[in-house]
Image 1: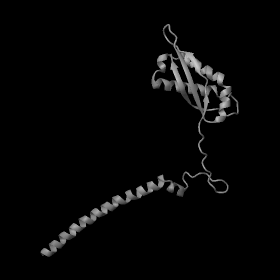
Image 2: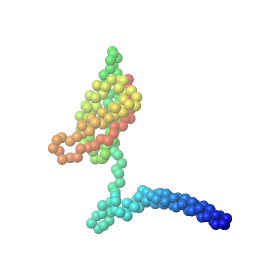
Image 3: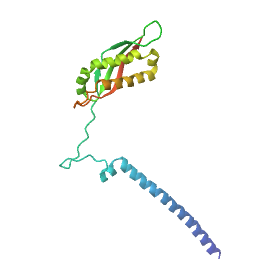
Image 4: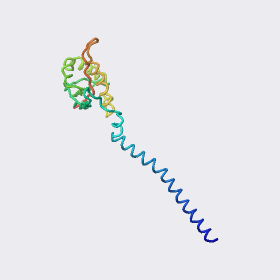
Length: 179
C-alpha cells in the first residue's frame, strides 16, 4: 500500500511538471513565431514575398530603381541692410546675408528674374520688425519662416503660366547683425 501511495505522488509531481512545460510552450511558441515574422517583415523579406511595397515593373518585368535624391541647390542673396522699427531717437539697423535653399538648380534663373520683388518683400518685412523680435533663436526661426513664405510668394509664376513654380525649402542665414 505504501508503494502505491508513493507511485501516486510521483505521478502527481510528474503531471505538475508536464503542465508547466505545456504552459511554457504555449506562451513561448507564439512569441517566437511573432519575433521571426517581425524580423522578416522589417528586413523586407516578407513584404517582397507578398509584393507589398514593390517597385513598379516596366514592360520587361524589371523593377525600376528609385531615383536618387537630388542634392539641394543654393541661391546666394545679396546683402540686405534695413532700418528696424525701433522706438527712441537712435536708429537701429539690421544687416542680413542669406542663401535660399531650392529644390532644383534650374530654378536659380527664375529666382534671379524675381530678385527685385524678393528683395522688396524681404526689406519691407525687416523694416516692420522691432529689434526685440530678432533676439534669440526663436526670433531667428520666426524670421526664417516669414522670409521663406515671402520668398515662395515672390517667385511664384503669374496666374495661367504653365511653368512649374520654383520651390524654396529654406532660408539659411550666413550673417545677421543688429546695430
